[in-house]
Image (cartoon, rainbow, N blue to C red):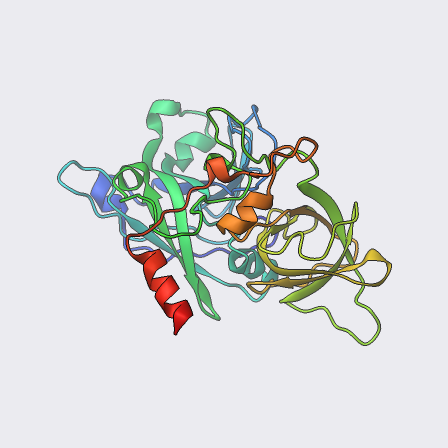
Length: 338
């Protein structure tokens, strides 16, 4: 959704009738802000850290410049039906994106899930009055604000679920019961302990390093599940196993991939096996960020000292977020004795 010459088509079920809008006199506009870990705040767009540049798309047959953002019109961009509940709030929307032959990059970005969880705003605009300079903010019909859900895609199209804030507020949330730590990300959130900040910080003590994609060794071939990288500073085999590889340059910048194994080879070049395939193999020289890994076990947690220069021997166990499920240890012990 970010390259020029991208061809976007959303299949519509005439959502305008729900809002009493004139379909001929109004166009749809989408403002999408993909997530991008490590990105700085963008005060000019009112965005906190962790988001990429906003992208704009419109159903009109010409581009629109609205509040400094160009809304592209490579093709029609229209929402599916917007059902409303008794409170007249959008309850759920789906949008189908057709992959164009001329836009292979778009498909790659969708497959890399760069748009999962992206911020999305959908509004209707009286385009004739807008082009004549006769509109103000009260003329814009704000239809939906929320996030893009996960995409389901095949060879020809991808279907996104658009989740309004009202739906997100009603999601059932909770923690999993397991003897493994259920922190969402190593070195963040409860692993760091955002109140006391006495845990592991993934941004400190060399736990995140820069790297670049390296050429494969002779006789080897990089593919969607395997890459070779030049780390900016040497790290031992296994250091980034269960860690994160983040692409920071090129057309797939912002994509994050889970690392299955980290094996140091000749001349310090590291062989990286991925847990999910990369849609496009990054070019040699593409810049990366690599985050240290953790398998979320108590034994591993004990080795993760918050400040390696002053080890305690307990690692980060005081922030370990696993559970001892009733009977689990007994069952495990019984299994070991068989």
